[in-house]
Length: 350
Image (cartoon, rainbow, N blue to C red; front, side, top):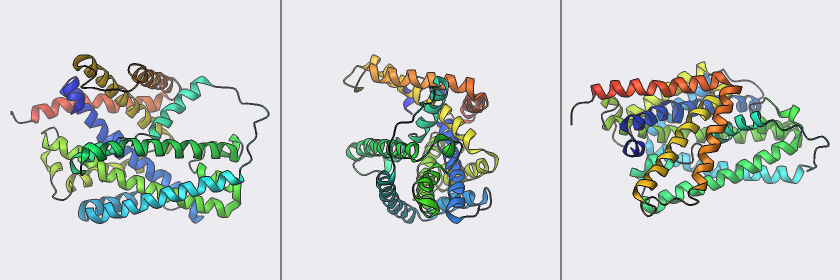
């Protein structure tokens, strides 16, 4: 809606198109794949590849579609527990880690740093998730603002703390290339028992990530269906958009069985990063057209310029370093335009 009003309905539709696949279904699948890796560490045996992640997605979809109050209630409790356990892990690790500067600093690789920024940005990609539920939030003028800045600051603190702990727990060679890096760091700090405990904590965190995306993503699909840009069936449901929840779950489960975690994160980070850059550009455009009073923007023009610049810069390096990731993301973006044209032809006249 925002991009449609700022630029053109085609761009707004493409943003919704990206949300269907890269905004929610893809991240749900990525969390499910990481969940399987951590469960293998926690249990000491690898669960059936794909089946475990698919089962968790299906369970979350069932709860949010059939028993939404139970789904939301259980999610709230798990998030509080997850945050407490993560903070406890960071405090435990900080008491055990030995901070010392490396004798020979590794050479700085500008391209690797740029590509890493794509992955880092992906870790924050859910910061705006509350926007999709704005119509169902009590006192949105107050609570929506809180739901945006408080989790963003909280994620930043936890993310920086966790990565600092990982880096000081052991050498890069011991941690490089592992999907369960948190568990690997815990093993270096406290042995196999600590490794399994932390793996279980992170697995719980990933379950809540899956649940919250299964909750919020279908709202985008349902609203696009109400606007006539997707089949009307996706808007069906009373207490929750049941059809949209089921549709998104099917897509996410399909991605689980055909994707590799590293490539999936690269593709999603690239796609979502470009989408975010376009959205910030829209805010800048609206401010220039309507004035600072109607479109307030702290740090203008430096903050949006830095964000857009770094996003485009890191995306360009991803194209060079990991062209397959960028190609997949570009194809997904490109398919949004013909999908818009088809949806427009099918849309009944107003």
